[in-house]
Image: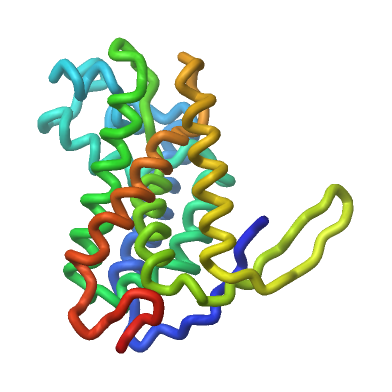
Length: 230
């Protein structure tokens, strides 16, 4: 299932969402100019478990503590499809969560979820792993967790594919995001037995749960769970 749009209008301009989207695209273009998926930026500014866990900075080095890669990593991507997929989810769901929180609170929420997601991935990775984790999906997973609690009954226009057949249907947000989270959970459990690179499912799992846990602290007082603004 591929979400295309949702039924919840935003009452404010989502400036932070636009800024995050623009920053991710700008950084990706810089990656392309410096090597694409093998850009040295990925190895310098991606979140590498052995660096974060042991406080060491492997080459290429960076001019600030390696813990900062927990933030910088969420603006890097490994390819066009990686970028497009993340930005699609950001575009559909983040504006409403930003609307429910306000700009500054949403920015803080997004960064906290991204850092928490990266730490989940690192803690569940082999301690000596030198594979960099990059992508906005951990932070966006936090946005999805918040959206699930804020707008569970929203309708999401979704492309559903069955082999060679496909259709566009309206799916309740709680169904779409519930299925998404179950897939991330099973994929996280499956990834624990693998030591190579791939999708950081643990970051999706951790980010989603963190988003659900923190949304109550970040939302506006006039915003109710299950129905947006009260």
